Image 1 (tube, rainbow, N blue to C red):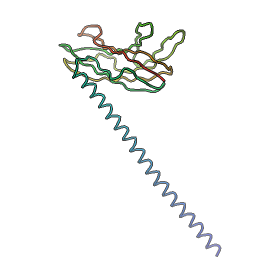
Image 2: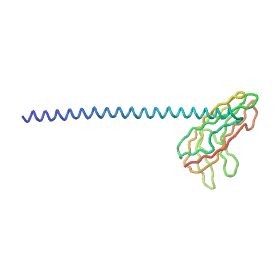
Image 3: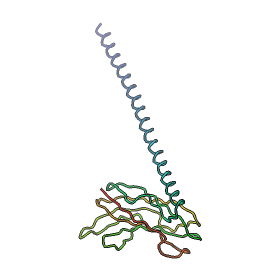
Image 4: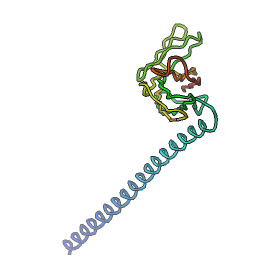
Length: 192
C-alpha cells in the first residue's frame, strides 16, 4: 500500500506543478500583453502630441506675420536627458528663401558663441569649464517658397552641468537670398 500512496503523492505533486506552471505562463502572457499595449499606447500618444505641436506651430505662423515660431521661452531638462524641440519658419518675403539654422550660446559677457551640430558645447563660467550639452539639427541650406512654412526638429541632449543658460536660435539668409539674420529667438535652458 505504501507504494501506491507514494505514487499517488508524486502524481499529485506533478499535477500541482503542471497547474502552477500553466498559471504562471498565463499570467506572464497577460502581463507581457498589458505592457506591450501600454507602450504601444505611449508611442501612439507621443506621435499624436508631436503632430499636434507641429500643427500648432504652423497655425501660429499662418495666423500672424511671424517669421519664426518656437513654442517655449524656457526648456527644463534633467542632466543627461534628451528632448526634441520643434521650430517653425515662414517665408514672408516676395521670393524663395534660402536659409540655414544656427544655434548660439549667449554667455553673461554677451558675445554669442557658435554651437556646432552634434558637438557638446563647453562653456567657461569664471574659472570653471562646464558642458552645456549637444544640439543636433539639419544645418544644411534649406529653401522655402513665398508664404510657405515648415517645421524643423532640433534635438538637445543636456550635459552634466546644472544651471540656467541662454541660447539663441537664428535663421540666417544664405545663397541667393543674401546674407544676414532673417529671424531669431532667444530662450532659457534650465538643467537640473
